[in-house]
Image 1 (cartoon, helix red, strand yellow):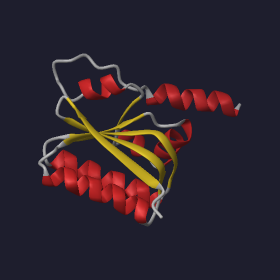
Image 2 (cartoon, rainbow, N blue to C red):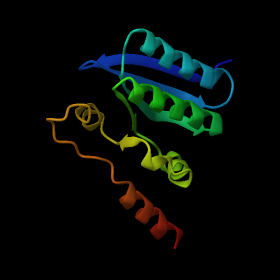
Image 3 (cartoon, one colour):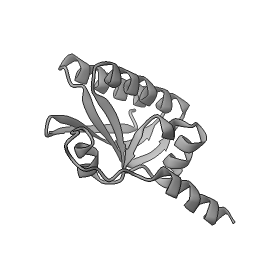
Length: 137
C-alpha cells in the first residue's frame, strides 16, 4: 500500500507536484522517483514539490530529493520546495540540505523564482533557525 499520493499540474510551464502522505523508503520513495522519471521523459526541467500534506520524510526520501535536485539542475532547470513544515525545515537544517534547496512558503514566489526578470520573496532560513533557537530557550 502506497502512503504517498501525487497530484501533478502545470503552471507557466513548471510542473507542480502536490504530495500527500509520507516520503519514506519503499513504494512511497519509488512513486516519487517514478514521477521524476516521467517528468524527465517529457523534457520537463523545472518542478516545484508542495509538502503541505506530507507528514514524514526519512533518509531515503531525502535521498530521492537530492537525486532529483541534481537531475533537474543538470538539465538546466531546477527543483524548488514549497510549504515545508517546521519539522521538515529542521530536518533540512540539520542535514545541511537547507543550503542546497530553494525553499518557499508561497507558490507564486516559487514559480517566479524560475524567471530571472521577476522579483522573488525567498524563504528566510536564517530567520527560521533563529525562531527555533528562541523556542528552545
